[in-house]
Amino acid sequence: MTEAADPDWEYAPLRIPADVTRSIAAAQLSLHAEFGGWELARVQRYVDGTRRVVLRRKRRPSAVPLPGLSA
Image (cartoon, rainbow, N blue to C red; front, top):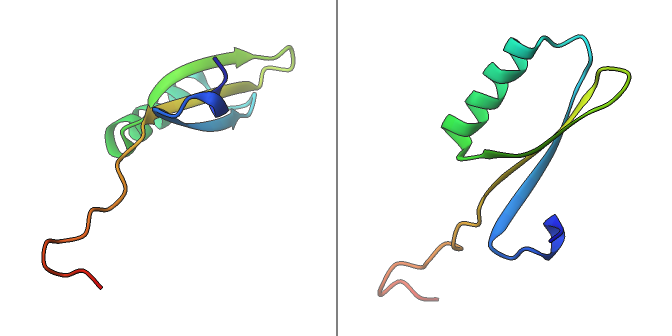
C-alpha cells in the first residue's frame, strides 16, 4: 500500500545527508518520535551515503468544536 492511499496514517519524508552520523540521525529521529508522535516507517540508503527516511503517525481527528459554541 502506498503512503498516499492510506487514510489512517500521515507520512513525512526526510532526507538525511551523507555527512550526518548514524548516532546523530538516530537522535534526530528520536526527537521526532518523542515530541511529534512519529514512528519509523522506512529507511533507504543510497550509494552516495544519503538516507531517505519516511516517518508515519496515526492521523489525528480534526478539531472537535466545544459543545454550545457552534457558529
